[in-house]
Length: 411
Image 1 (cartoon, rainbow, N blue to C red):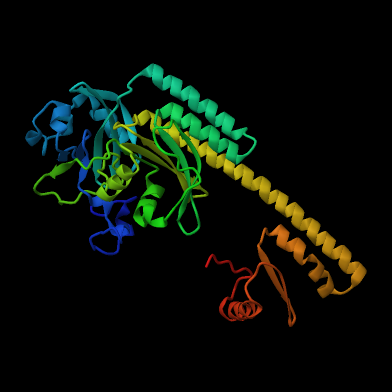
Image 2: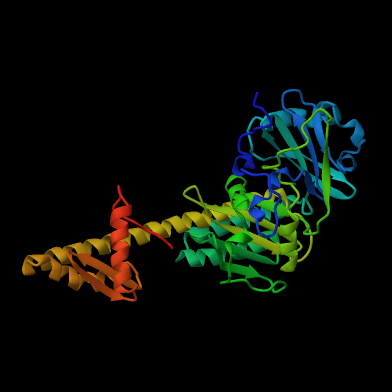
C-alpha cells in the first residue's frame, strides 16, 4: 500500500523550502499542511487498510453524537456501521470526491458526507448543507442544463460568458459571479460578471499575479473547486493519534481552513463567503469562476458539479470559437500566399513583392509594428522600436536561438 507520507496528487512536490510565508512571499505558504479545517465543518481520517480512525477534528463529536476522545483508534465501522460499505467503495478512487447518500442532522444543521482517498488515508468530511431540498436541486439541474445548451449555441464566447454568469448567480444565489482570465504573466482580468448590487462591480478590472500565488494556482490544477463558508479566521484543529505524524496532507480536503491572508483579502472586498472553480483549457489553467456573497454560508456540495458543468461548457465554447478563428486565419494566410505568388510571377523581384505585402502582414498579425529584414535591408512598418534596437535584436536571436524557426517573448 502507498505510503501516506508521500501521497500522489499532493501539493507537497511544489515546495522546495520550508521558509515561513509573509505578505511578500505568500507563494511559499504550505496551505496543504495548515492542520486545521473551517469552522462549522467536521473531519475524520481513517487508515484505508484497517479502517481505524487516526485523526478527528475539533467539534466532530457534536456532529456524530459521540465522545471525540473515544473516536481516535476506533474502527469506523463501529461508529457508523451503516455507511462502512459505501465508504469502502468510494475510497477505491484516489483523490476523487464522492458524496454519500447518507446525511447527518446535528444541532439543526444538515451535513453532507463527502469522502476521498489519498495515499493510505481516507478522509471523511462533513459539510453543512443549508439547502437540502430535492425540489431545489432538480430546479438547479434544469437551470444548469439550459445554460449549458445556450452557451454552446451562443453567437460568441462573450455572449456565452454572460449566459454562464447569470445562470450561476441564479443557481447559487451568490451576490457576485465573475469569470477571471489569467494572462500570460499570471496577472488576471475579470472578463464577465453578474451581480445583484450588494457588491461593487469588478468587471474589466485587472489584478496582479500575486493575488493568486503560485501554489494556489498549482492547487487549482489538481482540485478544481474551493469553498469558504465564512471569511472569519475561526478554524478547528485536527487531533491525531500519538503514533501518527503530526502533519496531515490536506491537498484534496474541501474543508481545509483558508489562509488568513486570503480571508483578510476577501474581507477587504466585503465578502463573507466564496466559492471558486478552475477553468481548464487543453490541460492548462486558463482562468476561474469566482463567486462571492455578503453573508456566511456553504454552497451545497451538489451544486459544485453544476458550477463545473457550466465552466466546462464555457471552455468548450471557447475552443469552438478558437477553432473557427484559426480556420479564418489559415484561409486569410492562404490568400496572402496566393497574392504573393501571383504578384511575384508578374514582377519577378522577391524583395519588391515582400515590401508591398508588409502592411498586409502587419494587419494579418494584428501587430502595432512590423519589421522585416531581407538581405541587408531592414523594412519597418507601424509603431516599432528604433532601427538600431531591431538590428541588435535580430543579431542576438540569430546567435542565441537555435533549433527553432519561431521566437516569441512577452518581455
